[in-house]
Image 1 (cartoon, rainbow, N blue to C red):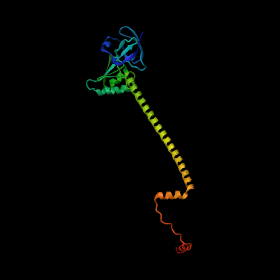
Image 2 (image 1 turned 180 degrees about the horizontal axis):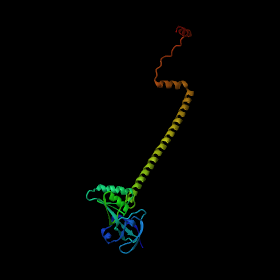
Image 3 (image 1 turned 60 degrees about the vertical axis):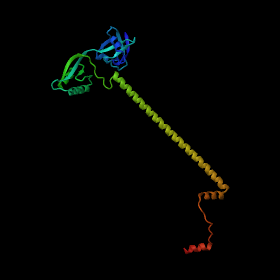
Image 4 (image 1 turned 90 degrees about the vertical axis):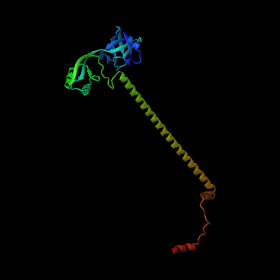
Length: 251
């Protein structure tokens, strides 16, 4: 058995000449929505396909085997219900309404411009006919919508985008937190340093002042007074003791 564990979506980047010579394998929807399955290609080789879990294989994808050979995937025709609006009094709105009701029932739907496809279901067929839609049983390839959170190629793109966004967001948050922490730390450190410095300075100043006061009180006091620039007149003559007493009595 030849193993294949890699898939190239729609054969993107592969030379048309290589794809034309490549073997192919026809798979219906039931098989293509699995990530692990066995199949037989157009050359009669047995294939063991082991893809990442959640992968959905689409028609036009290319499997890469362990020996480097390519195997094109063809969506095999299968029984489906083809849903179309009434040609006489129907409109495209009827398809929108049908898709709404089918979506509420979580039914896989293939969306086309002028019709819908679902897997055979007699109950749903009656519901759609009651909505004035035409329902026909046909044998055609089935490629239902994957949805925003479905597996396969669209899922891989969405997952990578979300992961990158979350990673960038977390990184920015961590950076901002570290910056804020560093800022707070620096602020606290500077505050403590300034406080200690001011305390030491004040202590030294008080000590020096006390020393000068003891050494020459009159000189220090006079120097400080002159430095302030306040003018002073001649000393006042003390009043006689009797005068002060009489002034007190007169008042």
